[in-house]
Length: 455
Image (cartoon, rainbow, N blue to C red; front, side):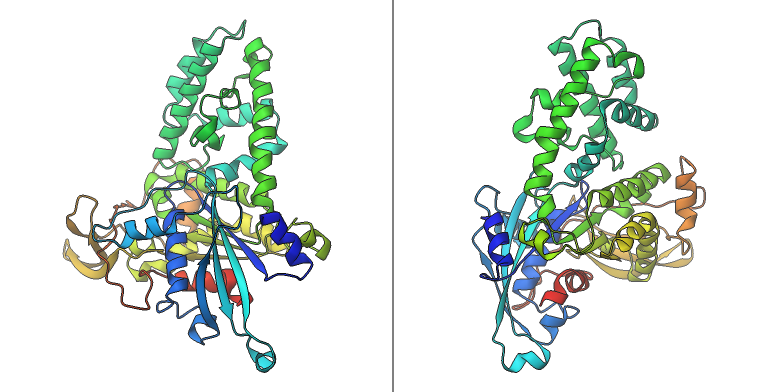
């Protein structure tokens, strides 16, 4: 039905559809972002920065049946209950592609408002793992290129010694499926450890989220050093790498990613800063590579008719802004903007509008000043994952982003002039009033940038 929607829209015989892609790397908060965005579009009391909500031109919003019969529905109701129920907790993260349709009834503004009736815009929100998006850049690489890049960047990551030991113990003179599975298991453990340690670029993404492909030959290969690539093992792994691109990555691009109009890329910048300079540089490179997978800019009418859209607006959002006092939010936004300079320039040059901001899809903290070592510090207070209340000062982010990005790009292994802590907060008890969605920070500004021009 999704392609049929595209064709009918292009012929002008149906209500317009805007497809919003939401992605990000692990623990960036994709599920919470979508759930809170939908809840706040249904009950718009906290959406003052969304102009259509503030001036009343957005008349109504309601959930529609899932438009694509072969794509799982985003489980909005269960996720909202987890976040706002009597025992609030974080919902499960993204494991596969899912989708939700929210229909918005809008009264046109301006000169046409008097003679044109209310219009309906269908907002199709597509949720997919950021790890899969990073796979798109594999499409223009062969097995030799990919292997060398991965082995070069593995040096400082956790789990590399175990993987190298598995390589050293493998007989490459013949291909053995049991040995291949053992190597793939060691490489997958390395990817999991790297992700847990705060690294962003952990490809192939399906190794981390295999789903129905778990144990298949398409997910049973690893990078190999140069001397092993011409062996029977190397030739089979090269073939499987090609199959992964053709049978896993390409269908994802064709069926989901290539049809997106607007895109949100969520980033746990605070988590990367806490993990250290190498994680920050890895995130910067990963985000530049992610943007390279987009086709930003405006598509012509024929391309739109055929469904080959271009992403017109891209929001890079640093999540978990509620872990900082608001006086530090401009610094977090500045660091995010600087990290994305290369990526944003590439998109802006192609005609797409981009924006970077700091948000909290679900606000979990309150602000207060705490006294520490004779100094008043701007802190946040919230409920920890074990149920205890705590006030927390994570350290002062630098006003000049280069104080972080320069040592990160130069290969520093630790911060010399700062100690940046991070703490995990649980969702706060529900305090929503009738007509209000969940509390947030700048989610209304994010919505205005992403969809405001269509309301």
